Amino acid sequence: MLFDTVEELYNHNSTNYGRMGLGVQRELEAGLRALEGAEHARLTSNGMQACALAIAASVDAGDHILVSSSAYGPTRHFCETRLKAMGVEARFFDPLTGRDIEGLVQNNTKAIMLESPGSLTFDMMDTRAIVDIAKARDLITITDNTWGAGVYHKPLALGVDISVQALTKYVVGHSDVLGGAVMSNRKDVSRRINSVSMDWGLTLSPDDSYIALRGLRTLTTRLAAHEKNALEIAHWLEGRSDVAEVLHPALPSHPGHELWKRDFTGACGLFGLVLKDASTEAGDRFCEALDLIQMGFSWGGYESLIIPCDRQLTESHRKFDGPLLRLHIGLEGVEDIKRDLEKGFAAL
Ligand SMILES: *Cc1c(COP(=O)(O)O)cnc(C)c1O
Image (cartoon, rainbow, N blue to C red; front, side, top):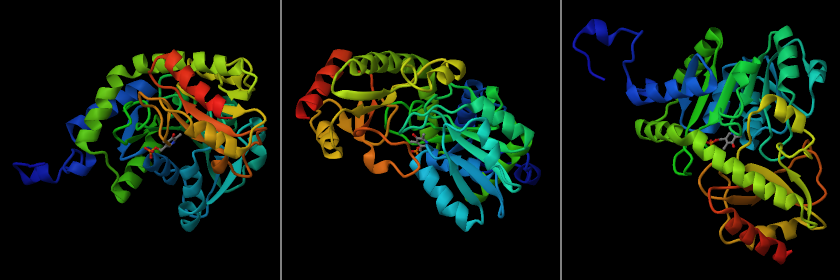
């Protein structure tokens, strides 16, 4: 940025350096504020940075944070390593804990990190009960809202203090750009978010911001198509004798279905699947036998993807009767997706 006068150059109330973002970042922030019902939004280079920023802005040395054990793996790793080095203790709790979270709150607890549903195990959290306890104890609540994409879930409207998204997933929607965002309605919290973001030099490039902004234009339309395709596949899988369990919160059989109906207005394309009478290795062969659906860790793009998840499960996750697979259902024809999955079942 260039200035004509020294007064403008040193005006700290206006943008004066590229790292703070320029016009395109301001437009993307405005779109995300509208989407999440937020007063403030801050962009980051990826979703991991957004999670780390939200957490770091909520705690100081000597503090304690409660983190859902179903949270995104790298978020958990950040809590176990970086936070520890910063003098912050993280305790992981069962995502099915509702009001009982009160029993885990210590005198130095400052924040609670939620992710609903968890992106591996699809446990639904009782956000309202946790928010009630957090408000009574003056704790900051953070939700990783990547699954709800800001469309199907509005954490800030439920009283959550910070909503985080990996824009990488549905906002970008084409698996070609990384991005993240941290949204809040609290002035004090947003000031801390901005301050930590400045100290760490977090930013999203103009080109990547433009791609994410363009993604917002078609977000609801794409999500509706992912939702429809995924539900059809989930129902089909649920009716099969070689499937032990389908972990999709919009299915009435899902243990968290009532919470999903209460707090969500839809479901994205990501859900889990447990194979019946099969080993972890058989689950691996299932994934490798597919052609249309390839293996990849990301999701939210146009294409269907699958990963075997057993290797990512830890002691604190619930146990499953067979290999856990995670499917992201894309925008392909449902019959093509089914035909491809049949190859996996044939390989069992
Ligand atoms: C992918 C993902 C992230 C991290 O996003 P990146 O842009 O890949 O860093 C965080 N949370 C959830 C739930 C995710 O799925």
